[in-house]
Image (cartoon, rainbow, N blue to C red; front, side, top):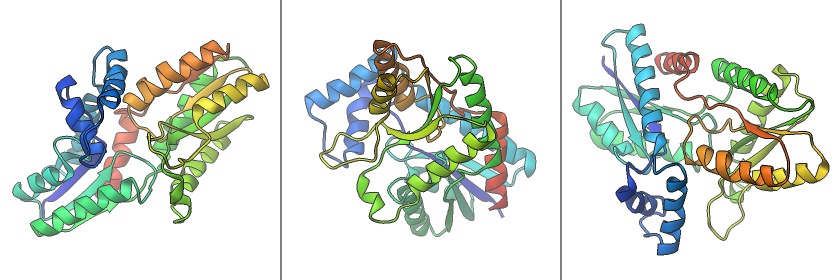
Length: 297
């Protein structure tokens, strides 16, 4: 039986002309205002007018595909499906089925599960699969995957070595609306578990959890926000701050702009030594472990 593998990611505009379409999709079909569009465009312009996430995602998909081919030659077909760009999740399912896949395993390139994030990917994939007559079984989370934890441990140690002694490590992920707490969503707990596991392995003396990149909506989002943490730690006289953005697996806008530009500028203005750890990207050990997770499922 041919098994299709749908690797799912958030998506990204492919170029400047695609930004408005992408932003409209994020806003569930409501076009952004001119000011909103200009603000998002300026962030990509600050990265040199580049759109790094697509290339990073394609490298991850290729690495997972190569490892699956090594495990079972010809046994898996692999494609990408994105939440907010092309190819869509539905496009990915249809491509796998048209290629002969008799069942599909879904893998989201995000370690922590929330009904409002990974859950939406899984629901869309399952619906598309049902329409095509195949079952789609999505892996819910991989926040305790040993290779992922080992990568974070190594990255934290390497980055801490570049800052003053007794610097603090702050583990971050993308904020979500605070209402997920009322629903008992596991997302905050899974982030805390990842952070505590890495902190224990690295024998960290000072560490905490924060959130970043909250949506621009009136409702409250999970906090504290990383920018507030930076201001607080500077006022408290912390020697330095390392951000481990463990909720993200690639250097996309939320990392390359929100941390490398916005957060760093704030830290610099407060004379707080600041650095962030490297992203997982297509790290061979992590991609191999994700492929093994897919094969086991």
